[in-house]
Image (tube, rainbow, N blue to C red; front, side, top):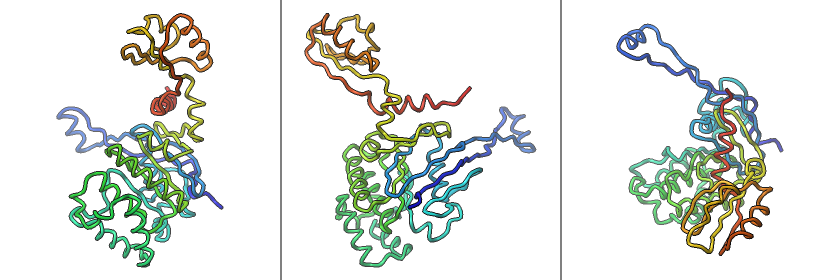
Length: 329
């Protein structure tokens, strides 16, 4: 079976007007404008197989949303080619548009002043969904997300989390083969985030839909994705298993040590990088190969009430990936 998404050396450049300073510069700009070229995406290639749930990560301005817009056909690339569901996205063929959904956490597709159920009916007409299939899918999704009693309420009266659930339902009503998610849990509280994660996980397992997710919440990534694609400054810098990020970039362990004394000893910096200190408890970053040696030395010199050895939080590892993928000088 061919990949659902095939991206081949794709780039996207924008010409951005550069305004000159001062009144004289403003007058000159009326007759001669100068533009800078911004490389939003730089020569990236990857493929995604049917049924994969892939995280697409990068710092703000990395080119994630630009890439999703190209894959959904909203914009076209400056260079390169792509195939999505066997189609060239920016040709915008009707059969292609009926097989995917794009959900953007900061954009609304539902009518603000109408109940969500009215927008759902409109989607049924647009996608020509058989009535029985529509009712069955709607029932499954509203039950999964716990919003059965809210579909007749005006969208503007719903909370942010409730609106996001309705947006997700609208995106899945026509049973797309590909789901592109751009920050679906942005701004949501922890409870709403967990509900969205649970829905996406169960829907993916049940329907084997292919999902490409961008998110700044690493809890989303850890809960849903095994594979991660990372871009920074428009360039692809990592593509592989989520666990591989820890192996490649997690060269340290985080020791959390609670000492028997009221305060930790002052000489811990000789063992590693001292982090947070709360009373007798201290966090210490130590290189992986030296963990056993460091613990042995500390235990020989000090009385310890408790100790734990952990990997650094995924957020910190991802930040390191972004830093190592910075622009070359």
